[in-house]
Image 1 (spheres, rainbow, N blue to C red):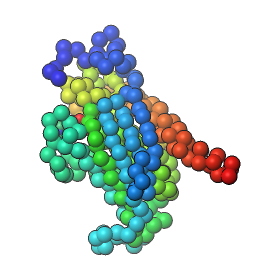
Image 2 (cartoon, helix red, strand yellow):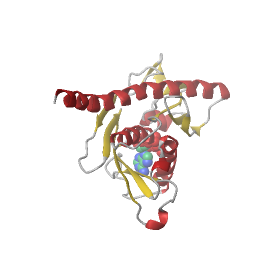
Image 3 (spheres, rainbow, N blue to C red):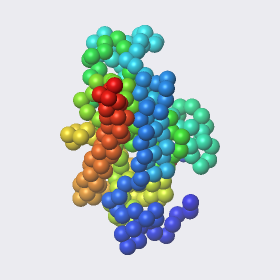
Length: 243
Ligand code: ADP
């Protein structure tokens, strides 16, 4: 899309959202039979799948740690996930996204429970519309829980930023392209921040405002993550009781 004249008019964004509104979220837990845990996560125009394997043996062996598990995270964008075909395979961006996403989840995983083993997280982006790293982290956090990996808590992620001098929650692709700032964060339900990145510029006041918006977004996402896990596991527990 060419640069629109305005990204926000009378407090309403081009996609009809208010400044503090998240895009629509859809979550499905346990979508892959061969993974130990998995999750499909739709976040506006983003569609991602996370698959978790492990704890399992580490290959190559020299990567193993004697006192804890190694957590590996591979973020990958399908070549058909963006408007112009993306060259398949890793690039600088996906390596960076993989690293920061792994670091956003490591603090909640009890890695010391599984020495010499690996916990592998794969995130495949099927459709991208800005916010794929946060969608991936949200999906991966649920997939880890679905795999039964012991964790202190879930991790929830979303971005806030600035368009047309207005601080807004959860930028879509056009807002990301033509906006002034984008700041993805990840957070535990207790409010511990495990990811904070910033693209663009915000004043100190705007940063405070954006940070509050993003934290509220994470809280709302946490409730949806929890509900999605409950939907799968509460019904199974009820089933057990009936039997
Ligand atoms: P995030 O997806 O986490 O917001 P970026 O800010 O790096 O990460 O990317 C914003 C958006 O730009 C992506 O969601 C995607 O829609 C688009 N994009 C990223 N990389 C590419 C690429 N190689 N080719 C085309 N579009 C891309």
